[in-house]
Length: 147
Image 1: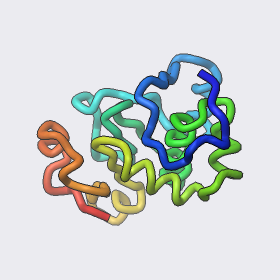
Image 2: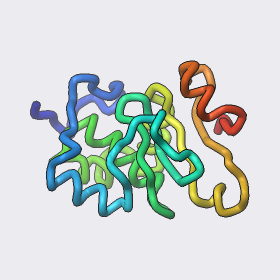
Image 3: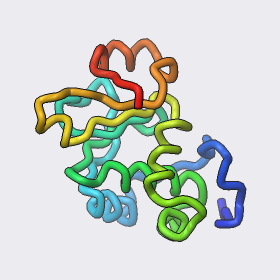
């Protein structure tokens, strides 16, 4: 599916867009962000830094890459893999805004940064608690905090 950078930037993530997590192109992008391939939430170790959304699963993400990775995932869904870098860096929003949009617009989206873990906190940041389903609430528990 071909999408334009001039498309409506306020639309929700395209539910029909499929990322081939096994492709070399995706593998190298994951390496750029020091991120894992997505894994199911029930198999995840939530004591490590991560980004999660119900649509894809949980990604372990290395120090300092959370906002960049969330903005990249959001960009891929908006304009496709080939144009994501242009959208992420040259679009109407900066990558901080796109990371925020990721947390707001994706069901169950949340993150736990390495900063919180290294300081002894286990805070898992999300946009809204009511965006979580019962399974997510059970796994993330009282560590969820609205930003």
